[in-house]
Length: 387
Image (cartoon, rainbow, N blue to C red; front, side, top):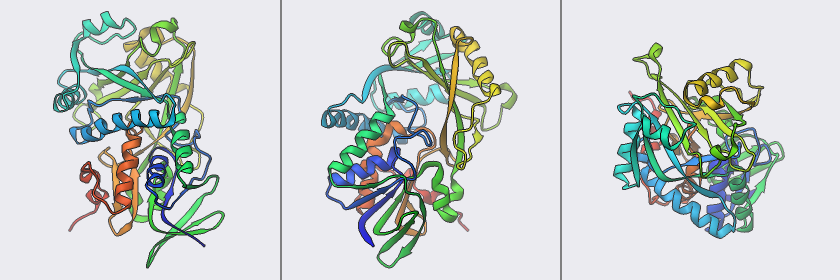
C-alpha cells in the first residue's frame, strides 16, 4: 500500500492547484480524479472565466483576489503560456443593490482603479448593453478573463513535473480515519496519507459523511450566442458584464434579485457566453450534463431581450456546468469539524478566479502552516450546530 504526505481527491479548480503547490514544495502528494481533467463534468470547463479584484461578494475575498491576480501572472511566466487576458468588468444593477454597492465597497477598500457609470454612459461606451435608466455600473478598469481548461492542464503538468503522482479515471469509494492519518479506497486500490483534501466539487458531498449536508450541487445551463457583429463582442472590445436584476415577484425574499452574466467572444468568429448565476435547479451528480431544455434557453433569451437585445434572437447552443453551493453561498475551506486530518473545499459557483491562491492556501493548511491570508471566515466550522 502506497503512503503519501497528502492525498487530494478531485483534480479540478482547487485540487489541481493544490497538487501543484504541494509538489513544488517537496511534499509527497497523490492526486486522484474519477475522470480525466480537464473534462466537462464539473465546474472547470467552458472556455472562459472572469477574474476581478473588486469583489462584490464581500471584502473578505479581497486579499485572496489581489493575491490571485499576482499568482496568475507568476504562473503564466513559469509555464510560458497565456492564461490571463485583461479586460474591463462591469457590475450592473440598481445603485443601492448588493452588487453595485458591494463592488464599490471592495474597490475602495482595495484601492482598485474603478469608475461608477450611469446607464447612459454604459449605453454610449458599449452599445450592445441596454441597462434601464435607473441602473448604474461599477467598472473595474483592469479585470480579466482566464481560460480554465488551459489552466487546469498547466496546474497538472507542473504538478507532475514537480513530482506529484496523478491517478485519473479512478473513482474514490471512501476513506477511513487511521491512527496516522487516513486510508483512501478507490476503484483500483488503497492508499494512505497523513492528510486528505476532498476537492471533488459536486461529488464531494458523497465523501464527506454528515458534513456533506452543507453542500448542494446546482445545475447551471450555459449558453453560447453567435453575435451579429463579431468585432463588437470580441475580447478587448466587449466587457465582462454581470447583472443583478430586481425581481418584484420575489421581493423581500433571499432571492430578491436575478443574476446573470455575459462574457466576450474569446477568439475570432467566437460566441458570447451567457448564464444565470442564481435561482438554479438542483444538480444530479449521477447525470451531470443533461440536455439544456427549450424552456431554459427561452428564459435566457428573455433576459437578453431586455438587456442585450441584439443577441436575443441569434443562434444559440447550450451546455451545463455544476455549482456546489453552501448554505450562505460563501466558500468552504478548511478541516472537517471532527477530523483535523481531513480538509475540504467548495467554491459556491465563483471560485475559479481564485485557483492559484486556493492552491497556496490549502497547501499551507495541509502542511500545518498558518496561511498568509486569513481564511477563517470560510471554515466549515460555521455550519456546525451548536447547543
